[in-house]
Amino acid sequence: MRTLVMIGVGLAIMAGFLLAGRLLRLAGVSVPVVALFIGVWFVWCLWDTYLGTTHGYAWGAELLIHAPIFLVPALAAWWLGRVLA
Image (cartoon, rainbow, N blue to C red; front, side, top):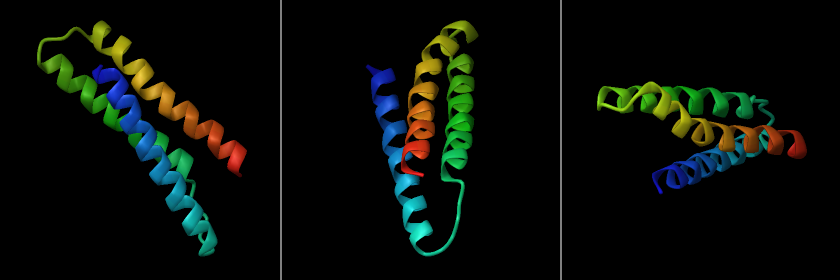
């Protein structure tokens, strides 16, 4: 359940980044929001993986959990960035 919640949080944050990028583009500012979102989301996933391992979970288990948590929002951002460009 936590995995689905975190994927939803990632998608919501991604939508915020894309909306901010759209508004900035209307203001004449070009910002690579997709790359920025993917970088921020990757760092957050690494941090959350680290926290899980410090609380007793194995790296392998954490990586299996965090792979979809990172990949679903990151791939959605990449795809939407290409479609909306």
